[in-house]
Structures are given as C-alpha cells and as structure tokens.
Length: 329
Image 1 (tube, one colour):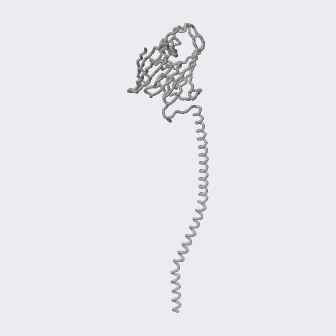
Image 2 (cartoon, rainbow, N blue to C red):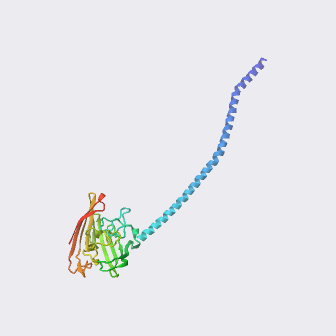
Image 3 (cartoon, helix red, strand yellow):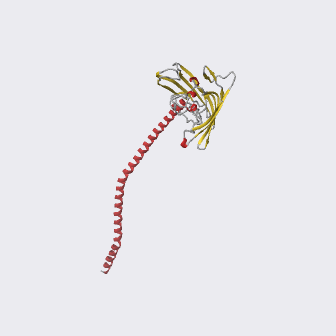
C-alpha cells in the first residue's frame, strides 16, 4: 500500500511539472494561429495595393515617355524652321548674342524718320523690312495728303486737292562686323506733277567703335540739328515743311544739305551726357540754273568744301537737348 502511495505521488508530481509546459505549448500555438491570420489578412490587403501601385507607376512612366517623344519632335521641327528662316534672312554675324553694331545714319526703328549720327541711333529690327534683297531688309516710306491754299508764295500758285509728295526706299546692308552701308532712292513729284528719281544717299562706312565711324560717298551734311534729325520723311517733323534755308537743293534750298566726300563722326561719354563731333570734306557745290549742284560725278577742277561740328547731348532732366557749334567752308 505504501508502495502504491509512492507511485501515485510520483505521478502527481510529474503531472504538476508537465502542466506549465502544456500551457506554454497551447499559448504558442494560439499566438502562431493569430500571427498566421494577421499575415494572411495583411497579404490579402497589401497584395492588390502593391500591384495597383506598380501598374500605376508603369502607366505614369509610359505617359512621360510619350510626352518626351512629342517634345523632342516639336523641338526638331522648330530647329528646322529656324534654319529655314536663317537661310532666307541671310547669314548671321559672328559674335553670338552680343549687341548688334549700330546701323548707319538713316536706319532707325521709325521708317519716316532717320537719324544722322551713327552713335545716336538705335538698331532697327530686321522684321521691319517688308521685302528682303540679298539678305538685307528693304525699308521705305511715302508722303501723301491734301492741300488747300489761297496763295502759295513758295510755289507761286494756288493749289487745291490731293497730293503725292515722295516715295522713298532705303537699304542698310551690313557687310561685316564693322563695315556697313546706306543706299537711299527717292521718287519725288515736282511742282508740275512730274515724277523724278534722286539718289539721295549712297555711302559706305567702317565703324571703329562708338567713338569713330568713317563714311565715304554721298551723305547728308552734318550741320546743325535739323538736317541730321529729319531727312526725307515728314511724319515726325516739328514743322509742316522743312525751313526754306534748310530745304533740299532741288527745292530751292540755299545750303548744301548733301555732301559727296569723306565724313568722320563719333562720340565719347562726358559727365552725364555725350560729347559728339563731325568732320567732313567733299566736292564744293556749284550753282546751276539757280540750284545747287553737288557734283556727284566730280569736278573738272577740284575745290573742296569742308566743315566740322561739335555738340553735347544732355541726359537726365535735360534728356533730348543737344547744344553745339558748326563751321562750314
């Protein structure tokens, strides 16, 4: 009996020792089942989301590639059009995007007004030329209107009606970074209504810089202000007509507003403004039939005419004011 008690006691102790192990195994199995359930649920949720994100990224990349191809095609088409326009507009000058050289007198961004000093003008956009000849824009302006007069002392007649005054064309070619030209052809209507053609200006120049430009040919004599500020256009003149003593030679002017010869012009900064100068020498004019002849073909016996002008262009509060002195022989 005692032996049986001992065996029962041993079994009871063994059961007591095995109870914690069984409890731990059951808990481990329980947590394993919970983890498996959570992992399965997470996979079911995240799996489709990951697939959708991957698909969305793939579609986005494909769309970006298509847009890139379209942009590249547009760039190629624009480059081809630019090359075509450059071929039509003539060769570009070397020097890249640097400021273009100052055009000669007469090339401004206003077709009806031309400036006489190369150091005072602003470059004219090339697209203002309606027609392009050999890569050079052709500029032009005309003068039409009407008149009602009771007594015209200048023309010694009375006129009423519509009028055509002149049609002017000019070219401003650039032969290089420093070599330039100006050609002006004017179709004028005289007092009797006849049309005449005048070569108003034809000059070639070399620009050393803003401080000096040398011209050779027929140019507007740089005396005073009016003759270099207002040329054959009347749109922006401060008067309806040119002053009589400054009118052109074939219209009764008494001063040689044109010169055939050499002309040097330039300017340097001085204070807040600019000091300008002009030096010129050319064929002396002669009087024929009451009009000045500028002797474009030369003289049988050369006699020079020459002169100089010194001026100062103000800036700031006196912007637009220019004062100077001129001497003519």
